[in-house]
Length: 315
Image (cartoon, rainbow, N blue to C red; front, side, top):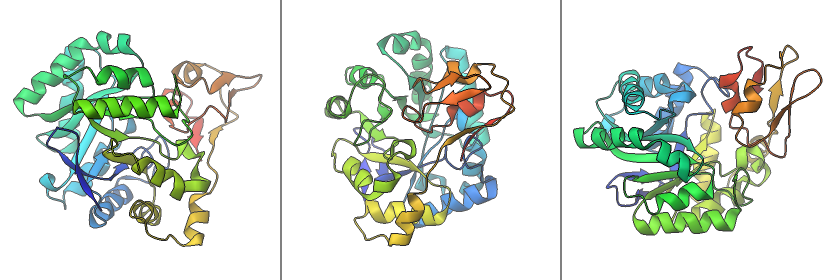
């Protein structure tokens, strides 16, 4: 697996980053033991970059895996929704404790929407800068589904790394298209920001063309690494093979192409919390329960965390 420097951060990462959302309680929920096994297998395959978040509930998976992996041999990125100085500090300290580490390589703001939301998180960003000076983190970051935020990061030296949604059809980009996101990513990279993208398969919409979709993202030199989820070693092996330009057996590709969708159980109380939480406008309240617009849904599973009745699943 190729290793590249993440912008000018001095942090070297594998071209593939294993995203842990898929293995956590918001999606496949494979458990800590199996999750740790998958993470250790990733390291054996040359994948040394791991993405998590406070929301994902996968700190325990990484901590378990790192009991058998030297800490300095892997790179961990996490983020949270905190917008105050104290809130960010609490989230960072929680991450350090639950991961069982004395530093996190990349830590930052989760799901930023615009230049205005970045300004509204100024105190949280200052906390990140202070934590960097203390050696608690190595780089600051933001994740986003918008072109606007990536463009803003290209002029923000306070932010070291950007984590944007990027796939060949532009699925999930809230305020633009693939070409506009590619231009914004290139501008951020030219400034020296590290770029690792998310959702190369568009939340499942591009599973049937996984090899082309993965290679398309990795064909952009300004994307230093690409996060992709997996819930099994076989699935990860296929992703690594595709990223390495190797032939993947047809039966494995058929497995990867299996359809996924967002399931809302019949006991939904129509509280509307999931509808309010969805940044893509993919959910609405129907006659009997919340309903999904499959064309808008990117299968991120974030709405699961907002459902008080535990009736939403990615299946």
